[in-house]
Image (cartoon, rainbow, N blue to C red):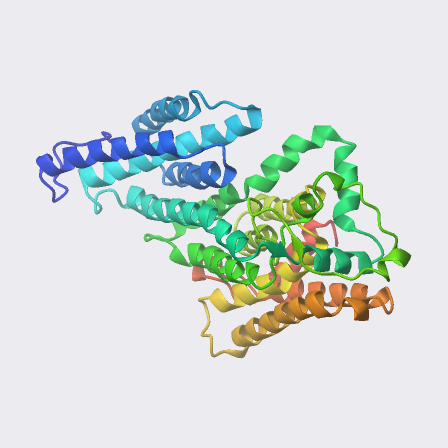
Length: 421
């Protein structure tokens, strides 16, 4: 199939199609100039279009064209802004994402949506993903402006009530093994590519864009952003600065600790409670049902890596991750489309997930002295909340019909993934 077939009628005259394609090219070059593709949210977010473009099943000529355009736009993005290999990876993926957006757009404009159904199916979610990611990147600063002081000390205190500080322990472990840094950086920042990969896994199963996948990922983001202003936390890496991860506070000394609001520079985003990174990783894993076994295992590996990455890097406290589990149950049940919200198996887990999530916010803000009565109490709450959230989420109705499978298969998948019988 030719890349742009002049013999086909897209419904638009040539004098409109040609200028539109040229205008898109100018816009792409402008984006490559003014957007900082070294920022993972931008590079990986726009780079997700490349995965969707490949999943659309392009003809060989278009793949070659995409490769050439990707190299050119990557050079345009990187020129004069090279920092290191980690940043270069983000820029390369972002450059190929820009190339994918340009190619898909021009093909649809030139040949028509009806004749380019596969390209159109990949184009729309790619555009939405890019715009939502860019909006998220810049909206994070709003919570910082609204809350010059954070509740980091409360999250720190809850972690300490467990008998140790998980993020500090793993932070010291990571610092003693510097060779792990590149892997942690890529796996932590590449969550947006995992979102695109999830969408790509189901593209061939529907003739139209699968908006439900995008909705569940970004509904959780928007609701999570709202709670960033209710329980603003930056993470120990930012709240403790150079003292992270070397601070050691004994359990005995913690009894005298009085948590309070602490000032943190506005440049650091308030994105702690809940942890959206873990929420997204869990949602990706939960929705790989009916995908091949290797995809489910890869998604589970992403969840485990995200737990380690968020703690060891100092981006989150364990409290942030614990709260993310019932939040994920709430989001998954709320957005499932295979059964009505009036059915008990959907509304009940949604309500329970929401109640557990809100209860954790109250515990984190006002329950420190109660947690310090006995070390077993916070452990009991963490274990019960986490087990209920994960097990219930695994047996929820599928998000969309294309993901349906027999009830209970989620438990068998989890058992097999961890090497059980």
